[in-house]
Length: 80
Image 1: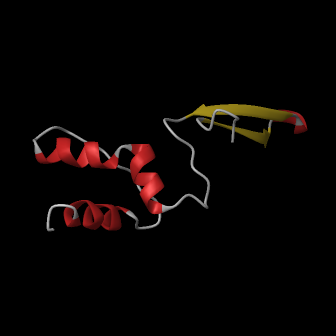
Image 2 (image 1 turned 60 degrees about the vertical axis):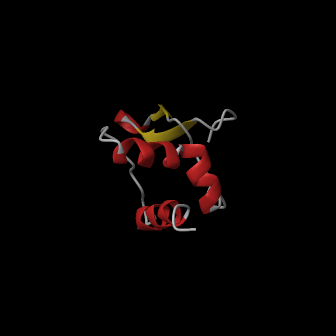
């Protein structure tokens, strides 16, 4: 992960055994130790869900089945 926490470098084997480095940029790169509330805050999940409920197109890509937890946490803020 880059020092800016928004990029990731991947080194892979290229032609004839050479090493090829690829750089990828993201809105956020989060470590495995990042807590769920931190993920929601850093990725703007509340804003995206609010927009979706207002009829705007929104996309959240979650790995590991975390999306249902985000939606449950977001909906629980309105049930109290």
